[in-house]
Image (cartoon, rainbow, N blue to C red; front, side, top):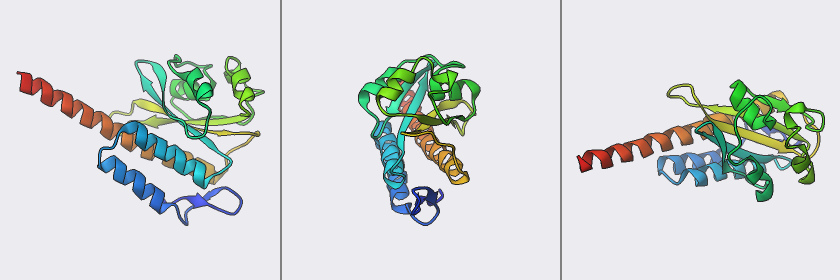
Length: 193
């Protein structure tokens, strides 16, 4: 896992942040609850990149479900709970649909946000970048990591690296949680047999 920390300009670089990453990896290894791990990832991003708000959505049965949301208001995040995945479902639903990052530099101008724009603007959000979290086991999309900003923003090369890193770490946590959950279910079925 790469070391990322805040530069003087608020962007990420490779000079620090290792303690936060180690805490997250320790929680993954210790089998801490998935929501706790995902919340720690959001907290890490928001602490090291103060102008950013982070959310992690999970994909279950073709719909989006809130995994973690950092500083985003609960009333905003709940709007996406249970949303269908599709080609015009803000940044996260569209990223899952396309199986590719969706960068909306100004959501006031993006048709992807037509059904969600009012709620986002009411919470002071103007830009959202979302990247799908891909399973290392079978390539399926497990969820998304999204970064929100209060003003229009385009990602720098460092920001792309951050999105990739967040997706990788969140993907490890989600994959291992699924493996452990499936293992526990298999053990229970075997014991009942």
